[in-house]
Length: 180
Image 1: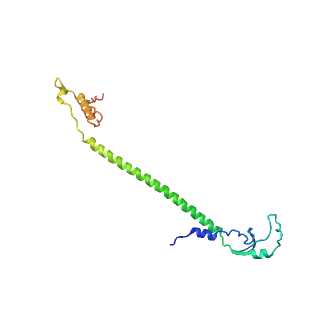
Image 2: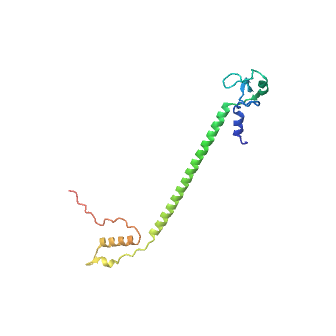
Image 3: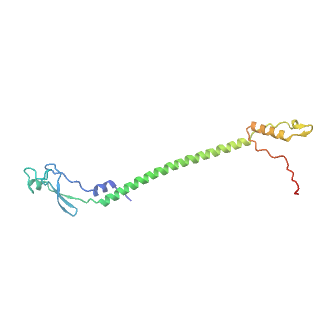
């Protein structure tokens, strides 16, 4: 489909401006309207509403200045063109907003991928660290193993190596008393 020239349509259906008299340069007045044909002529009236000096109704100046104009101005077509222009402007505005949001979404998605990549690298690095565990023989007092001291020192060694120590496990057992 060929491109529509809206400016040409606007000019074609706009009302024709009142022409100036080719003789004296004054604005002419409508003398007769027949369909789309409008006859303009310089009537000879002055600003005060009376004839100008030396002028009479239908004199030679009137006859020479008379012009017929074809006025096909249509306000409905002009209103439709205005509506189309408003619609096109709104579509362009919404497309700009959608493009801006798409760019923001893409940036957020890229940032999320980058954060996930950093997290996976950190997790891999966290899982691959070396811990120097304390010598277990140091935790025997009178041939009795001291588990809480050993657990505390192991957690400190893990944290010192860059790891994260989980919460302590409860090593005490609870006695269940028989129901009475």
